[in-house]
Image (cartoon, rainbow, N blue to C red):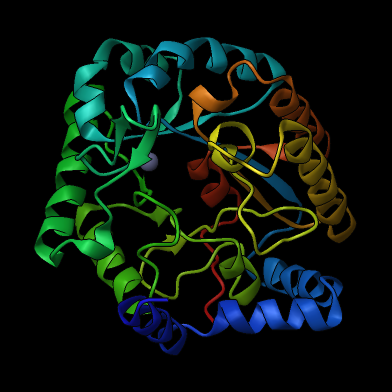
Length: 308
Ligand SMILES: [Zn+2]
């Protein structure tokens, strides 16, 4: 490990020790105590049942080619899809996203710059534009321009935000910085944090400014994100579509037993539009949880947020 990455890890640990502590706790005692903590914190956050939020990060132009059919199928199943599209891609594929907005889809600010590119050598989409590698002024500008793009192109003032690349801009100081900007822009929530935050703090919490709604994890590894890249798209991936469904079912079993919380799952449309395992996972979640957008979730919880 290079010294710089070791120091970066040490800094992250010192700034927010919750993730390694919860991981150790989970390894030592299993995940049951973790879920009991989640249940207590969910009740305190005003949750009296299970809610399902399905969100879709549209990070490439290929997502725009498949997203409308995906949206239609999910709506027919009863889901309430939410979309996070960088402003630059909203400009490029405006008519697609305008049609989705007309159907009543919720859109959140996902910054302005593109944060993936096509790596022709590896023949795969790769990540770029990480907020933690940018000057603060560039991050601020990207959030402000993303907000403006949604407003200008869709005629909607977005109420929420998702930072590019989960888990790379996550120290309390970084989150406070982002939340302060979101407050200035009139946003009410962000969904940019990893699953451990739901266990450390709550499924909805306002420790950093506006409401933060962490994404959800796997049934067998609740601190690990359940995402479409790892199971459906990553080159040399170890997980499969069957793993996605299995982890979704096991997570559903956990949530059903505790009876209150937020199943907050996100995927990329391109990864899942033709994957039956994904649609079966959604069907499982819909059997136990009320489908809502983020805005509807906030309305249902009456704006009550746990502050740790
Ligand atoms: Zn993204």
